[in-house]
Length: 540
Image (cartoon, rainbow, N blue to C red; front, side, top):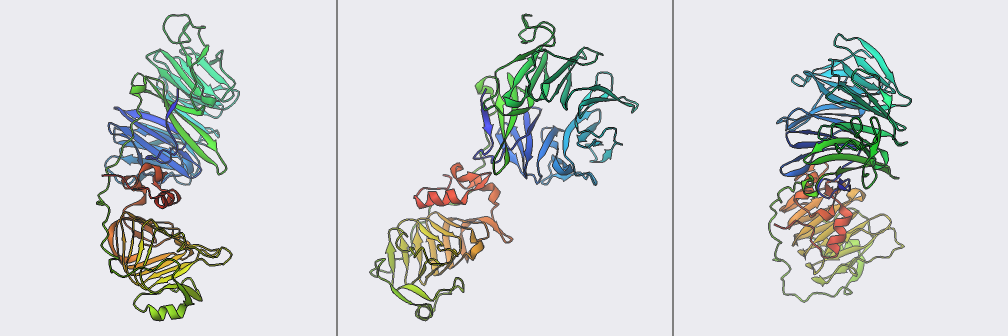
């Protein structure tokens, strides 16, 4: 059973584990995260899509209807998402900043459980949260509705029963932390836990150990009515089935190994730690996670054990934004004979400013001398034009009194130890694509005209771009590189220093998937593509 959805998906971005699954009326929700990341994914007829949520890491999701869910997770985060609201409605948990593990709708309320014995009830209509007096100091990871009206809590290594009148008693103890519990329709109860704990209780009875359990942490279980038994999942991609008396393989022919014996099924690939199970179509969905690093992060995956064509593997593709066709060159047609790249003179910076008074000169970076081109310049690429002495603290400094025409990508990536470089053009500039990266101070007296993309990023070392006009299909700016100071005739995407245009987290509507990471443009990959002459824009 192979994973069909994994962390780092080019369209969905981060799919961090541990993941929790829930479904309602054919809609699937997956929530997870940790180490500063979170994910809330929704699957409907259009496919999977990521919901934006400012949360540290999610541990539980509970649908209220096809459009609305409750989510809970790290640092006491509790919120109602959807229901026609653009922003999540966060529920205050007071001074509690622990991790919330469980959400269970029992009766008209939602039980919310967490570590350090946290138990509360949430009214889904009003959003009112009532914190219960603590009855345990253990981590309460689950709340389960019992067949006689009681509520069963999985807390630390204990099962704690709360009767309808509020009476609480520690009913069962395992030999290590317990992880989940589930009832069958006949009232029998299955319980999982760390270190290979698997118990089964007859209706009204006490849980007893089952045979055949592996020496693994068993994380979750689900009663499967189609096979009349329990699916068990855990670490190393383990999946098992615990069937009724005499049918531990769940095929109904009675040839299993007997009551209370676990039958191992085909494991998940890759063998992540499985944390949840959800019925879907002719099979079941499973979620798993693994920790990678350093740098440490949680990576999640979703699996399906049914027919391949029934797997919910479709991913929603947002409509492409309309940024028009590539621009056609209209500048740099002076008719003057262009200079060759070696036809420059090195003159003092102040002398260059005197000879090019019609353009604004940046104050940064400071150079004493500059390579000066007295006329138009036409080059195949920027390799020779932008070269500089590697041992110098600063990079190149170039001034062009006419127009600059580049047949390939205008790669104005700053060079030198201080990432300081200077490019000043008094006339117009044309290129199929353009990069302005790191501490490049670029000023263009006329029009910067680019067929496809102008990319500006990593400007925290003083990067700026000034021009009278910028014309392009798309202008992208990020990572402390401010939006260029120019009259802009381009589809702009970026958010730097409060200058927000099209949201960067919707980059999938502009750029091809191969240059997207975690839902946003990967600047380094995009720059490499542009240098190679490859398009990073989605086709119409």
